[in-house]
Amino acid sequence: MGEYMTKESFEKLKTKLEALKKKRAVISKTIGEARDGGDLKENSAYHAAKEEQGLNEMRIRELEGKIESATIVAKLDKGEGDIVTLGSTVKIRALDTERENEYTIVSEDEADVLENKISTQSPIGGALLNEKVGAVVEVEVPRGLVKFKILGIK
Image (cartoon, rainbow, N blue to C red; front, top):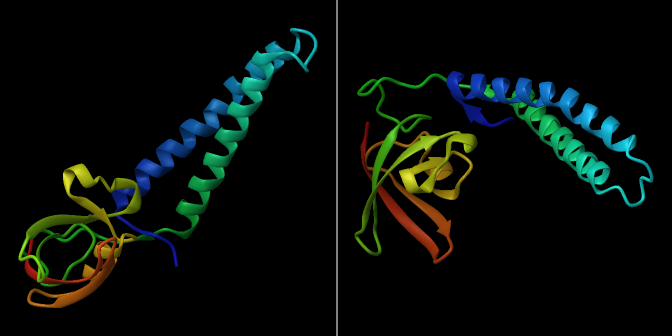
């Protein structure tokens, strides 16, 4: 099974993929021009362009794999669901410290800890998925096993 993502995330990945595929022609032209520069053993422009080509191709394969195996899910409108889904904002409390946090559950490509957006692939995000308000989930985090209680879902 692939990564869960919204239709919007899926479309962003497709746009990135198309841009990388268009970049192929530019890189190929750069390689051709660098090759015309003479001895390839000591041609730094050629080697840099070849490295860029390899990285670009790697990224293309990565995005093609994500797109091929993606599971597209609909974001629920606020108040529409009572379980944690992709796009839900979840308020939780760590039972050992009583510290409360609020996270939005997003796809891996949208995750941004600074904006409190966590991926369904992360330990906390994965544990919260499909749970209800009041549920207690156990999560293995860097500081050990922690229990979180779900206080609210919006």
